Amino acid sequence: MKLSDHFKPLPWDVVAFGMPCYELADVSPEVLEYAKNTPGHYTVKINPLAAKGELHANGFYYCDSLIEPHCSRERFVSHGNPAVRLARDVPFEVVVDLCDGAFFYGRFHRDFNMARESADTRYKNWLKQFHDSGDVISVFYEQELAAFFCVSDNRLMLHAVTGKLQGKGLAKYFWSVVCNDLFQAGHKELTSSVSSTNLAVVNLYASLGFRFRNALDIYHLFVG
Ligand SMILES: CC(C)(COP(=O)(O)OP(=O)(O)OC[C@H]1O[C@@H](n2cnc3c(N)ncnc32)[C@H](O)[C@@H]1OP(=O)(O)O)[C@@H](O)C(=O)NCCC(=O)NCCS
Image 1 (spheres, rainbow, N blue to C red):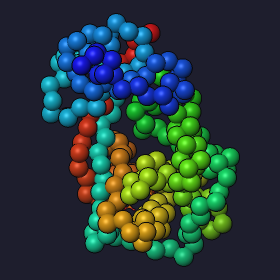
Image 2 (image 1 turned 120 degrees about the horizontal axis):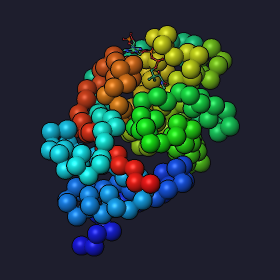
Image 3 (image 1 turned 45 degrees about the vertical axis):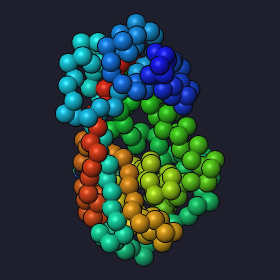
């Protein structure tokens, strides 16, 4: 196998950050050595119990831990609210406004080598991709755009509540209407991926009956 086979290119991150971006397929000494000596940004997703000494020795630094919320139709705890409704036809220019300053826990937002605006751009570009393929569900609360959800089959990939409505205990109503819609579409299980440090979203998923699995530590390396 060629060395390049161990580096998975991340074209959407290249657009957001203007530099070569890769995820490492493994952390063998040759791969770490090559990364350390080649300009770009590198991501490693690794079992939290794996040895990390070689990563640190080669300049990698800890950025985040991801966990996978998952819930079956049977376990799901729905919270109804008559003021909440779902829509699929909200223009991108309107939905994208919810991204500004909304994300604090993204791994690129926590990476001290990366510009916050570029990390926001990464989310906006990602949202655009989902919007172009018709996979964005919006939620209104009393006629106001309250939240968006990017979905891929049974997975809630990217989601946010508008800043004005955050922290008011409303998110469980927004999530309920979307999760119910996905279960009604035939999915038997819903999943997501969130930072374990984002306690609001962890508590939110817990209150909806989700459990958590597949923890991963995220390490980054920036070589200028
Ligand atoms: C994360 C997010 C979706 C949560 O929505 P929210 O409207 O702020 O959350 P709520 O006020 O409904 O709170 C959700 C639960 O977390 C708890 N909670 C809220 N803030 C908390 C905090 N800072 N620490 C711990 N728990 C918190 C609440 O008590 C609530 O639980 P309850 O309903 O059992 O009382 C929202 O803050 C958001 O969109 N953030 C920016 C984008 C983001 O981080 N998205 C998730 C990753 S893709």
